[in-house]
Image (cartoon, rainbow, N blue to C red; front, side):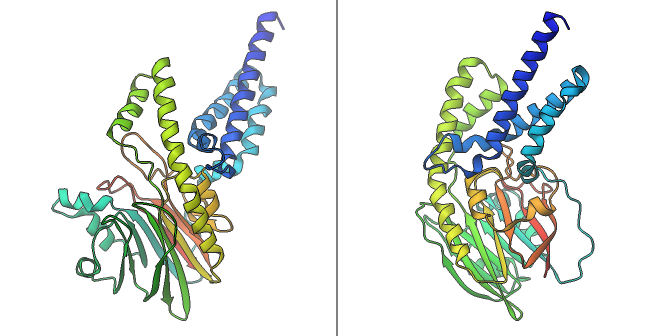
Length: 352
């Protein structure tokens, strides 16, 4: 092999190792506490880009030096768990033997979509969802309004957060109790509800964790980076956005800790944890709250399932977990309705 060939091979191999190391760091960054490592803990946001880079090296080596294809494949194998968490590929499971329930979580953006459209798309979607339990975030109706709008749900609960912001729970099962999980937040919150499911109790933890609070200016900066990513703009705008996301992650971390502690204290056969986490599948909040539980989308979802759908910010920030009392059969982010800045997330589960 001539000098040029050795040089090209060396440069490619070095690039592959750098991309692979970055990929693995992103893959395992969810274990980093944002309080201790605010910027580094946001590495999961870059996971899909590093994943694509490593996959690209698979094709590079296949066409250039086939015997070195094991290098990117080794990185992909080591980060396989994170890949399946971020973008699983599961079809619907076989027919269940036990009772099948449907759970739905949906950030409805204050029902603004219904205010703008006389057909009331969000209300109609929920009415026709056929879900047994519905958890709603950024939902501002009181219980009287809920009962009038959703007569198919005999049991409703309006959960008051702060500053006029509410969350809601619609259920076909009697709601025995609802209490807020204590943590600091101005406009967000988490609630623990107990539902009577025939002879059993279903514990539901509905969450709306701290928002990243990206305002109109922040979104302009982000869109500018995408449209014309020159060096200076990436350096200044990128640092600004990362710092803002890191600040939100620092607030979100103790919230996730409080929710996780509340979950651990539950001695219940049936548990559902869901809501708007305002964080990706590769994040401290997702990792901490989901510890010991089954990520329903990871177990029965298809593709990356981006649930946020505005301003070119495509991430799955709405999540659903269940305990061993349920087996996920099918889980989907439903992009058939775009009346909110979030798509609804629903899951069919078999009661074990």
